Length: 443
Ligand SMILES: Cc1cc2nc3c(=O)[nH]c(=O)nc-3n(C[C@H](O)[C@H](O)[C@H](O)COP(=O)(O)OP(=O)(O)OC[C@H]3O[C@@H](n4cnc5c(N)ncnc54)[C@H](O)[C@@H]3O)c2cc1C
Image (cartoon, rainbow, N blue to C red; front, side):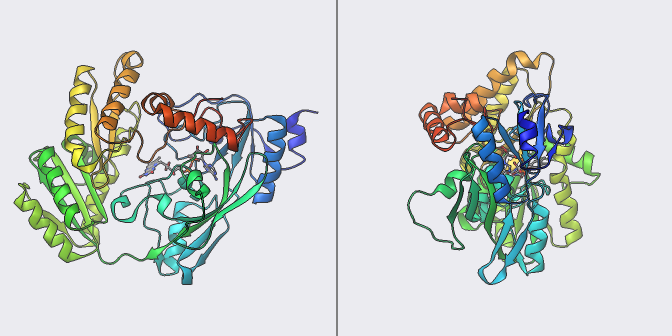
């Protein structure tokens, strides 16, 4: 009897299909999926436990998959094995008195947002793709535009249920904001990208709903002017979003959205969202005093949506032309320097880079466009670029994760940490069945 026959006695087994073969990683850098794999869709942690126990005994690789919206190839089954999809694990309960949601790993961002809203609450982080799942967002420590004020996924996970490689079910944390109870296994699992355990359930912190918003759109003559404004504003207040776009990114957003941005002048543009009109007014004054070309305030939802659409559609306009989406994070006060030096480096290699990002938290999204013979020089360029981010006090990934695409940079730039990560992996998953070859090299 083949291992698939035995597995099908534990859980229903589905044949491979493209829906489980790829994620949203741009194809030029995405890992190559295996030809043969099977898909399982457990409904609860006991089923996950039985599947992992079996896979561990037989040393069969298991690739956990949430919404498949990842941008680092994390969910791609790179070896013959089992794709464990969390799509049926969608139980969701809101405990409004304690401001938490108890979610199955497969609950989507949209389902969580809607449930929180129905209870008069909100889930502030909004990492772009609404079909991303709670399990996937935790496993990548997802961020988004509101991280400056509201933090990343790590700041929302109060407790986790997870299944270890050998099938043991563990619970870490509780329904409490505070927790000083020994080593934080919970935070070790946040950002572990399916390599240490399968997350099956999580208690997620909710917030009061946001109040009326004011949006400012501000063009600046130079990136340095814009970033001086970012630093000054964030010294005095925390906007809900503080985004930047270089001029070319704005032009792409305009073209794809069919909307008009506030100005075509200036090298850099800021988009700030405030929950208080007074703060927006103060920020506008700061921008004017620091050389803004103009300050445009949008107070109606229609006007705000129009401008947010320009920012929101940039990636759509670039999707087919990019080699990949980079997401290095640098200290916010270093963004202008990183941007300028990145562009100089790109010019040396003859590479066109389109850049925008989350100025408030330093997360810079750089989009290298495909060029003839890119395979020969691109990876050397990327290594230099990410080294530059690290030399400025930054990190190589702010929100997309390492997955299958940034292992060599992690290893080269952080050798001691990389070795410790390998040892941690060995402790959690001695047979290396959980997402092998992702984040750390195979042992
Ligand atoms: C248009 C677009 C916009 C985006 N914007 C943002 C953004 O603003 N901020 C941001 O942070 N990201 C963004 N992303 C990336 C992506 O949405 C996030 O990485 C998201 O957290 C992935 O969730 P997922 O459920 O799709 O995970 P998947 O892609 O399915 O998996 C991602 C990783 O998590 C692991 N995993 C999934 N579920 C589990 C589980 N239950 N237990 C253990 N491991 C698990 C997988 O093995 C894989 O390694 C964007 C993506 C797109 C396509």
